[in-house]
Length: 187
Image (cartoon, rainbow, N blue to C red; front, top):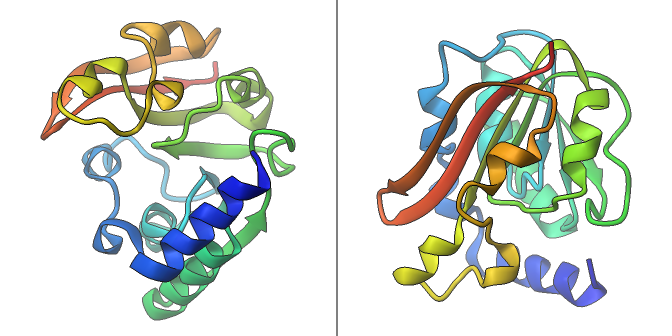
């Protein structure tokens, strides 16, 4: 990620605060019965911590990996307000490896870096879950952003998960966004 992107995200967090009012992703919340309640979780590009705090309140030991120091500061404040602890890792996920360790859960909501899919199986414990959601190109029918560079092709996500076992896959309009969503497990 270019240094300009880091500065852009920092400015966004400073100017607008936590994204979407700090509420966790409705997709993630809808998976409540499927997600682990203990073990380690990794929230990729977790920003201000909306998903990480929710996961930590459920009993998981959560690490947020994000490029934005301003976003991570918001996550630190959100965790303190929620009475939970988060591990915060400032990293450029487009060039750096995933934070070390093995995880019961990896969450990536609204972050596209195709090369990371090759790293997910090694980062998951046996039986560990990948929860991933990203807009597709069909989203451009209603919205100019994100641009095509940050959008999946229709049907692409299914092929990106590789050897992980797909437990749930859906693609379509959810609210006003066209997304591809997957829950996949390491066997």
